Length: 154
Image (cartoon, rainbow, N blue to C red; front, side):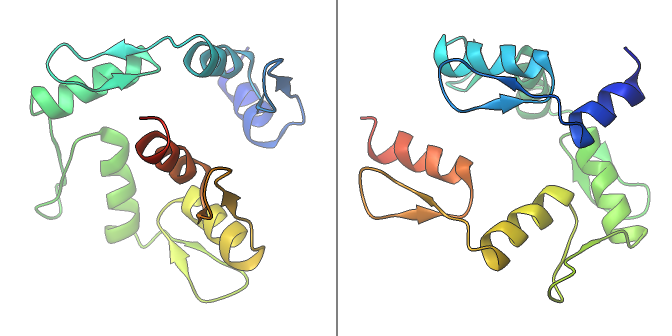
């Protein structure tokens, strides 16, 4: 399957792969496999130099390179250094090329499409993720998950 086809299916397609253990849906079968392994089967990739664990081998590799081997990607236009190549690309596009993702409902602009999506959902659509064990609410699912790990999974 070509990269363009995968991109279209992933970002724009309606193909969904549903988890049979929760309400998670993926646009690619590989993402469903990663979800099941990490969320339901407890598969983690542990760093042998610190306590961090990852759900994907590639995330562990990036962690080791940036945190323990000191790999940095330097901007050729300023003093910025990134720990990941993708972050350097975002920096260059945002700071030096002026690329921004603008909200069509207010004046906010973002350097990441995902940040714009979170902004629209939380600010303009009022979407909140509520903790079922206390009265806290969050604008992002990952923040609710982190809250639960820190406060309710002791």
